[in-house]
Image (cartoon, rainbow over all chains, first blue to last red; front, side, top):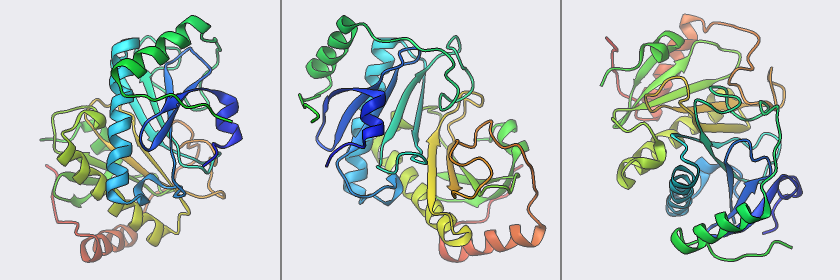
Length: 139
Length: 139
């Protein structure tokens, strides 16, 4: 299932798990991952139980990576979807020293920074080596 | 486990499920439920799988109630916890006509309205009759 163009425009595509494709928000001021389940449902809480469980397992894996790689002491996890209807889950690494703490990130990031290519390669390599991420090229 | 005083101050206590107690945000401008699992973990994605599954089942039940009772076409589901460390899950009924659509509710509700007592009683009665909510009195 194609990923909504608004999500693609805002993110780097990192790869795929069994159910979700994994995107990284282009704004590097906070570590902000987005999982997109390959499903037609638009509500997390309306997924069949077994699919929901896999989606949560994959989200937990991404959260563990964010904690380990970025040292984030707190994870914000959310299914919002008010702007982009396609089901997608935010896994955001938060820290009391980050730019909009304690406010949520949505609509509150007033600075922007890009990931250097070498950092993107390192993130993808670690996710592939230790978190079962598979290669996937978005069209 | 006692519920954090900040959560109690902001909400009406509606009752309990197997794992979560159920709170309703006092601000009635959007239907905003908060589930508080009776657990020491502070991260949803670090709960044991079986507990996480029950927490998600209870959240799905609350989402179904919000959709049915308030007619919300969209559910925002989130575990944030930047201000209150105790694990709690937001289930918020959203509508394109609501006051802060499409922004998330956190920090964006500029109006306030209270629930009439009769409405609170009706909500609790429906949750008890059809969604397996049990009576529970917070101290």
